[in-house]
Length: 95
Image (cartoon, rainbow, N blue to C red; front, top):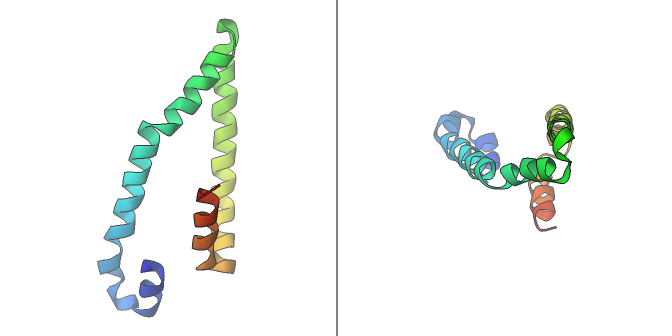
């Protein structure tokens, strides 16, 4: 994996870096253009018209809390399990 290659050959990290960064941006672009829009549309559709803005606000707040906790917890998880985290994410992707 690129992670292992960058750990064993730190002098070549600048050559390895563009590939995962590009994949991250492509994933975010595709995800934001497809799946995440549906999540926010559903929130506005299930609440009555009078409170659909509040419903969307609740959804965005919950999403932001989840993202915030993920950002805070990920460095701790990655530091403790290193390469096994890739297998965990791969397993969770199949659920």
